[in-house]
Image (cartoon, rainbow, N blue to C red; front, side):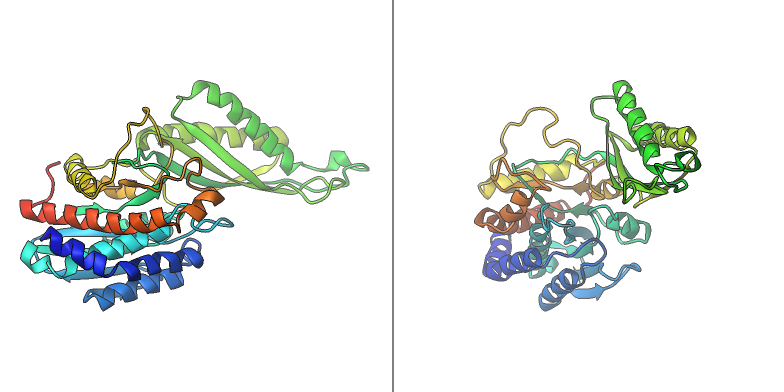
Amino acid sequence: MKDTIQQRIQEGGEELVGLSHRIHANPELAFEEVRASRWVADALAGGGFDVQHGCYDLPTAVRATIGSGPVHVGICAEYDALPDIGHACGHNVIAAAAVGAGLGLASVVDDLGLTVTVLGTPAEEGGGGKILMLERGAFEGLDAAMMVHPAAVEMTAMPGTAVSQLDVSYEGRPSHAGAYPERGINAADAFVVAQTAIGLLRQQTRSTDKIHGVVTEAGTTANVIPETSRGRWIVRSDTAEDLAALKDRVLRCFEAGGLATGCDLSTDHVAPDYADLRPDPTLLALYRANAVELGRAFPDLPPGAGGGAATDMGNVSHHVPTIHPILGLDCLPAVNHQPEFTAAAATGAADRAVLDGATALAWTAADLASRGARPPS
């Protein structure tokens, strides 16, 4: 059965690599993946899947299902890009591998007793598309949810942290900075106070806690006291519970900026909070064995390697047995979210990752079907 799956994926290899390259060459931001989601939907429809495009109140979400077996496996495709640097996280590889896994399983679902659903999930890069789909029932009834993700080196599981993303703004009062400074309320100064407080806070946080952000607006000319300042900040911690406590402390730092300067503070969540990733050990063992059989090697990495990244697949993992293994592109020193990784995501190593990732996922689904049930919790 696995030979049949691999043969089907290899036969469609040119189309799968072409899909990866097409998405890579046409980057679309979160919730704007109009072309990529359509290409994924069309490829699955051509393989016999029952496809819905624009589901769960998300115009670029996809649900494609085939089979009616008792074991129901979900395979997640991501396809959003990053601002300015395109597919610097390799979501083109993820999408093509997910499509390949689905097509590889399509011809054997009845023999395996499988139902396969490929979910096109928009806006992983900050928008929390999977969280919205989870809340709207997309993952109900699944025995497992799986995907692969490219990075510089191979890993069985990404150590995903819990994350909160905040838009922060201050409103003050403008004035002539030279003639009437006493009549102004400086919104830029509020961020200076807040960032100083955050810098001091870091002395009393755990080494795995991370707080980082950018000021995107803080005035336009030196002789006018800034009326408005804006920024985007990210808070990370090991677990959702730890994140909630850390976020409260960070918010007090922003409140201090407003209090010290007299500015009005506004904060808004960019997306739902991302939970920590909890991969299922049974599924991971099955996937790793399949990846090794395909010739992929897992190097010994120091503790904490790759830590600090986050994914909305973490929220899924709290409800459904989940895996999120990493496909190494052997591209160091280039790492995710660098322009050099954008280039690496359309190389021969990335093309191989598409086919190996598709095959390893499909084989893992076949292994799960042979057991006849969801992994033990």
